[in-house]
Image (cartoon, rainbow over all chains, first blue to last red; front, side, top):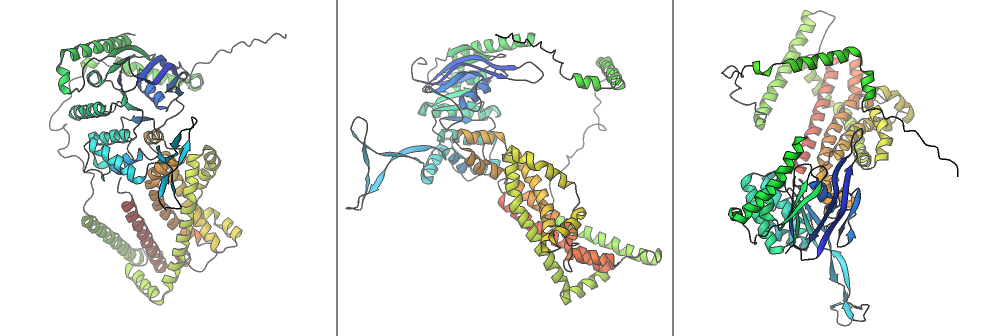
Length: 299
Length: 318
């Protein structure tokens, strides 16, 4: 299934070099090629320092590649934007806003199209305005506007319900546990309704139980909406459980080492981990990652 | 075509060569000896850590929480009574035991002066002038320091331009520039406002600037990914995250205003608590002087408490 679907994001021979004063420059990414297709769930694993987060930052537009190009639908990525939502490991919630306001913030700057209305002087009713397109057809005239506050509240409520945080809308982040904070962050990312959702080790700081719970929640949501996800982790089990495609990266210099299609049917649950096929994938990925780790410590 | 001059590349000095060259020999010798001594420690000969009653930690961890309000207030009151008792005692010792050379007004004398001046209204007249000066200087400082601090944090050139002045003025005690300000303002009310404004402005600018710089960069990144422009980022992230620092800066600013009051009222006036304290002190009328200081201090505490209540109300999310 991974070879079908429209390419959303294309990473073309991307290099990222961090200059170091009085020392050797750090090559974080050394010629990475990657295509992210519509409705894919991609997981990136690799040892620490393999440039996973750098890659995510480049897709998110928070960093620019030293050479090569990252494009979304063929347009070069020049900066961050609401078409690529990011969920950070450190939650990144605004401490001065309630849960609801935090989720609403995600939709604050998005524009959508609505038909232009005009008052008919004879009847005194509001009527749609029509215009002709280049083929001469009459089409409704549209304008781009922000969501109204009411619409934003409705969107926020939908995703707060989705992450099962109803009843906590008016709480401040300091009153929530780590898992609940991350749920708010996930709801905010989904409310953005972006093309791609970039997740930077979102469950890295959580305990095992909360992590399993949130993995299942994320799976349920993804199975429903099939939103293209780019998920970074260092947990091999996590990547096999979630991903439709796993990308293994090698460390220093960061490169794509192997791409594996995970051929396990959705819906998946924690019980999927017991299937022999899961174990095969897991062991294989673990071998590749662990071998790289051993190689890197030999020097 | 003219022959291109081929530059012979200079041999690059290794990192830290200057530090290496500047280190005196005895320091190097000392470092070498220490490193050799550390390497010579035989870890296998160390015994296991002893663990018995004498070396195990305290039964209870240090408790950093606060007492209930009434308990704090009660113990605070006891503290105040103790200080007054010591003062009272010393006023006897100073006059009766140490002889004529030393003297100190006792609490009852000060209270008597307070009743006298409070009933004839002169105390309130002085206090009124001082309150007006503190509030006007403080408010002008708030209005000016908040934008200046934000500009300094937001635009690098503004910071580079203003920082030397701010850092320089912070080191100068206000008393030092009183004559200059008096001359420049012809000793009017403007001089007092200016002196208080300057002290509060410097304190608040530095604090708010640090607060703005303190913003969590992950929040900035998050705002950008939601499509925020610089203007949205400023109003939606920078201002609210610096807000607690603005309130802290205001409390520090009130403190600065109060401590500069005496200096400000040395600039040609017949009214004001600062002037009153200074002039009575110069005439060695200690009873009036102490009374003025106590009223000034109580007024400062009142202002601080008002700001504290506002701070608690506005930053519940912290």
